[in-house]
Length: 255
Image 1: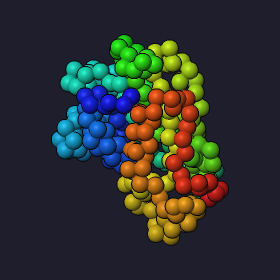
Image 2: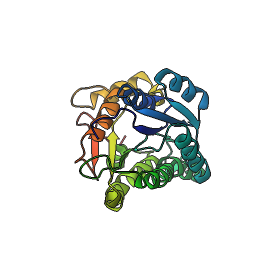
Image 3: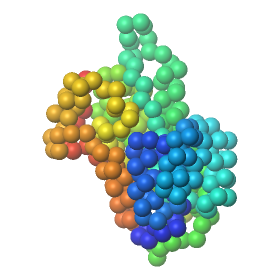
Image 4: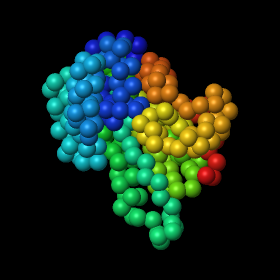
């Protein structure tokens, strides 16, 4: 998908972090961006800045996603790009000082990160499947999901998070195979630590340890680097059914 002028994209978790920067990057390419987020105020502020449209969406709720797609299509048009950045991180040991892990934390993490990704995929893929092909290959759309290197080397206290991101990784190839008949590509990006608001509260010593563990460049990834990779995936029509690590060659230690 080379010429993106006027193409409709949906970015979840678009009010901040990787989602916000990705929305800006797409808008700079002439894309009409629908910003889906629970934080409507922040999403609306960014939407005005980039000429997009904001929608308050709970990605874990089927009705919320279905309504958001209907409103997005009515206001902007049918999407050809979906980038899932919505996610949460709740650190919790399976057996902690106060006993077994809180089951609600595990369920919530899976519902938002994995369930929310599948929820938006199913609805948006259906919408894409009804559109005319854009390329000689018959491409109708592309879906890019944010995974994490925790899917491969989850650290102590990350069982829920790693499971949720591992599900996104495992879902990539079967989703790509299934949606191939519609001309819809499915990819995932697995970042390491990214300089986002989620990392703002990290103590300096922990931040330094993270950065030292990255071979090169020895720093956290920038949200712009995630956005640039997403844009490349959109442009490169032969990328499909795979997960790309964005981690500076780092591998997570146990803790």
